[in-house]
Image (cartoon, rainbow, N blue to C red; front, side, top):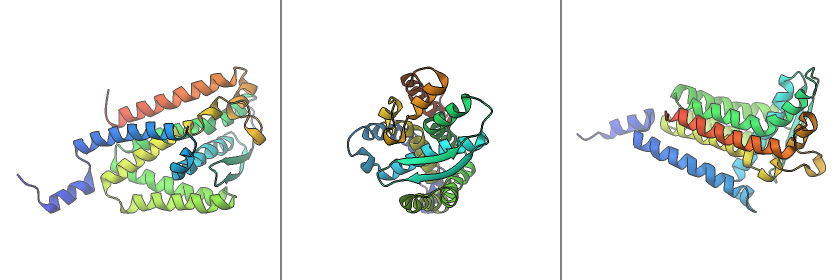
Length: 247
């Protein structure tokens, strides 16, 4: 029995058929692998430029928000056109060395956790649509409250408006796929600067995040780098399994 054009349009606006879902999972896995590899080669940051900026935003927001959760201050966020960024924060914590170590870990690990939440949100259209609106709005909110670099003041709200546009105008299946794709990008953003995870120095900024963890938690920086790289991959795989109901 043939479906009418109206029936087909209704299907697109509600949900993707199983074959599209299978293709979507394959494409997401391929995109995750390609993104991770491209970020490791010269010029890869610029091929993936919007996602490079988004990865930096995720990373630096992880530092700043963790500082806030521990009772400190998130003073400002600077994102630059070369894809780098700096979160400036003050930390007042009664947790001793655990506090600064958590803030250091939140840069590389905050994004995968947020990404997993986005991927899982795709299981429900209402939650997926709401999550897109929240993410887009939070990009705009962060610009008003924390972003203080000229480039960031242009790039971050632009990303926010694009995501809000998808949430308001795209069909349901496209919104679900978009939230999954953004979640995947957040998860693999740990690999944005894979060498950074296994570096002691962050150049003029001082110690790397993993070196900060070594400073407060004794174990060597390369141990923490490896642990976070593995954890990010496990979080991505498990969230996709749940989203696509694989056991």
